[in-house]
Length: 344
Image (cartoon, rainbow, N blue to C red):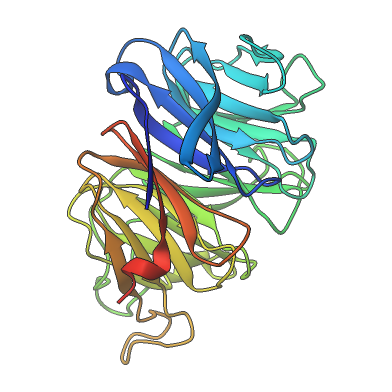
């Protein structure tokens, strides 16, 4: 396990470069992101461990980071002052572009993996905005009418993106559809609901709670995972979004802050939680629980408990041996570890 410290800065998000296996970006904030500056770290991995190649200081907290899919030196961050900033790490000090359209904190950014000239941001102001790095203003604004904690483009389509919000709903947008009154919305899924049970309430229904994170499966086109304050990770099939979750992964003691599907295996995902653990799961999509059609036997495969504060970010390495990942926490540390080493 490798470690890198971010003195005075609490980690919020971490991302491996899609171009290099030895480059990682960290979005961090002073004073737990409540007040104060932010810092974007660009870290390298060498023979002597993890080191800072460069960093950029910002006037407000940073909450998320995403690497460009077309330019190896560029990446975008979401800031507490409502700005979305694009940096080029071959340059010094200042961003090459800064968009200031959101009215509140930008909590999530996502680069389109298919149409690689677009990216998205989501904010506490209840909107998602679509951007092109070459344009001075946003291309499109999608309203969610609720604090939007996470936005993600589908890795299978250039025009499909999704979000999760404080109102406990998953929203899926398809930009190919007419805008009309729905603003490209094609699915609105209540995350606290369970599968329909004729004549009685669902066994799996829970009280609504804020959903903080979600991610698209890299192999199963219509599958997503969501998680949040109620500590439960749920997987969903968008071919039948009203049929309830495919799997319920339980075990975290506090809110789940981040989930990330494996880029190598179709049924494995990682989670980072406020219970100070990062866990690896299988959603068991090939098996089903007797008596509950469609509910898979998901299970925890292992956990990493080396962080000493809220775990806020986690990401998989795309290269090399399967299983390497990075996590950040409010304990001001980046940890790089092998998932296979914690699997039982």
